[in-house]
Image (tube, rainbow, N blue to C red):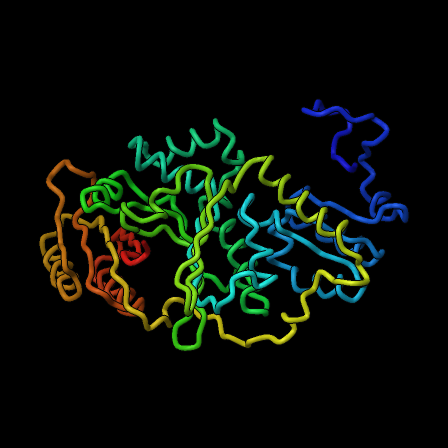
Length: 389
């Protein structure tokens, strides 16, 4: 077993002779048939995986970073060597979502994915909803309980969930989807007032990874969104993940399970190991030949999405009465609800609004118009997915 520090105290007992910090020798060892990579990060993990496949070894990994960046190349390399490259543990922990998509378990065309894929973000938003914590307090609690890394930037920025969504979309559409093709918005700008506003209207704020097809184009994003308090996603708390596949004929299929922690990850790694041991590598490759025919769908920015959505907009503006009036005029064009918080209710907030159904292009037009006459305006927004039950 390759480890960074063989002398480190561990929660399991292994003879010292089985531990080594010489990772290169493990990759080159001809007596080893399967490499399990769980070190994380892009490099040197990617290089070791590539070398193992070139050396004719099967590879099992939990590394979402490597799979989202280089999964297509590594999958094809494994296929060329008659070996398996499996990565169930890279997405959604205990939920076998990779197998569901790769083996086409759902007997229908999937045209949308809605998912909670990051346990840290979900834990933080659960705390902000249920305990009234501010963002920093909720993050500190997540770190205290082990649901967040010391550096939580990948989690709270949405990048972690973006890597996972890119993997799922790549499998679903039979073509590479890179995380850079997603629109990603983090959760760090949410305020207690946003949660108060949501509670008053029976909504909840959840960190969703979303893929939708509209007009033959694909739109993928990671963002905090508003859902009904009665929806299934509103009930997904703390470290749990959930995935909803929106299917053409059979409706929505929903899967829920733990998405973080050592045991869910270990369970997924063991599942992949069992698949390799149960199959003759010469008989069935990890690469599913049904995936060879790529659909050629175009992945686009949300700005090009013609579908209409309702949005919650919160603006912190100056006290200038002329600017206030102009904001009111601009927002009134698209709003069902326009509310100015009472003095002292929330520091610096001037208005919050709920729009009618409008496309993203109209949302950005409104925001840009406000910024054109008040460059110092601090404006945030959330998409409302009120039909996601």
